Length: 328
Length: 267
Image 1 (tube, helix red, strand yellow):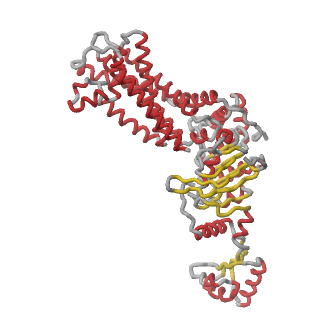
Image 2: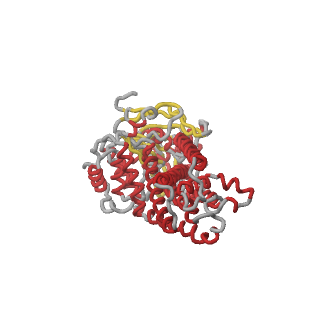
Image 3: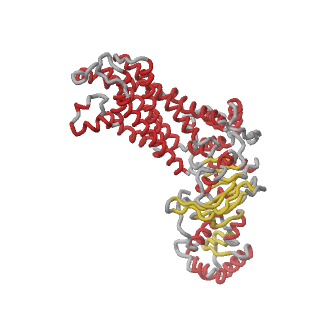
């Protein structure tokens, strides 16, 4: 295998479950210490990728290496190098948080006293010292996820796979899990995160791989992806929505033909591309002023990742890809 | 900040087996599962012996305690297998099996640990069943070797049933469904066996099924191994024990094949 500075190399992976093709020719790599997000809707194939990389599922075609080991021919070595948190928290509910950690430590080969010491360190660092000796079944969703992540860190992983770690958590718990995931980056642990939340991918990762129906449809940094959705747009909210047709007239050439039909009496604003950024906004204001139209709000908006995502998935639908749809 | 600094040691399969076995056994003491298992044997003994004793002695030669003891022992290990299956289904639904599969643990170690837990459950159930049997007058009449044979056969049956139960638990990923799937054959095969009544008491068309189904064959073999004060029970020759061993081997073989299939499918 190609050693070097790459912790994960995925080369032409395909996977089908019966008649359903879950992954088509997936290729990407992750540099040591990098945090990447696999972003996609339910059924996109994210979990299948993580399961292949963590040796739980075999690919039909293609090869992948994790921490320098082939996931098919050296699964044992891969398992010694990784941590996996699956979508559902995988803990023994009959045990306390601390007992779960000690058990995982012992399974990883630590002695009983080493395991106990590690468990004490981790419950303290993960803010669970007070709850450590309660059964896990009494924990909140956020606490369960934190213990789940701590179990993966009982010995240091080279690569961490976090499969939708915040799905189902309330906003406060989500942010506390985000804080923990940010520490993976600080510790230099290569991290592959799957998420369907654009905001999460934006907040946590160095690079985003957008997946839809088993295919990678875009890849890049947050900024690179946002640039793909254009330079931004200008949004004008009139004081009186009955002015919308007048605004459309006043804007004239600034408003593309396709957007002229958009203002209706059900909309309270009008939006149009701003290729020159602030200059476009200034020009729009000058034209509205000349037409003597009063407005409540004017904004120059950068495209959000949501815009990017919807733009990209719309593009991929147009290319008539074969249908895929396994569990994400 | 020491969270990220511990290097990976080399895991030992023996240590992993031990840790996972203790994980299965320890909660049986805390959760009351052991207490329930012990009281179940007493309940089986009472429910099979007391109401039927007076009625059935007219159609059964010798002591009814000797007659019904194999059924009590089989019921006890069957319910142990069900507890094991419930645990296996719970592990699957909680996805802790997924965590183990992504860790450096040999694929057979979690199964070996669950089966060790099942052996412990079956041994406890058997010991309690024999104790309850002694209370109603059951005795081993054929000496130490055959007593050992009786216990070994019950344990082996328990292990085979546990293996099947564990498999059903893994596949169903549903503790409630697992219990129902296992309870139904137990009820049907238990009732339609020679465990409580002689085969002649069943309708003629049903008698071949009653005689030859595995539950009855286990009962015949166990009765022969335990013996009786009278000479009414067959001597444990190969012709009496053989069919039970064949059924046991068959169930084990099918379970192991299905296991291999399920493990392959998981990949």
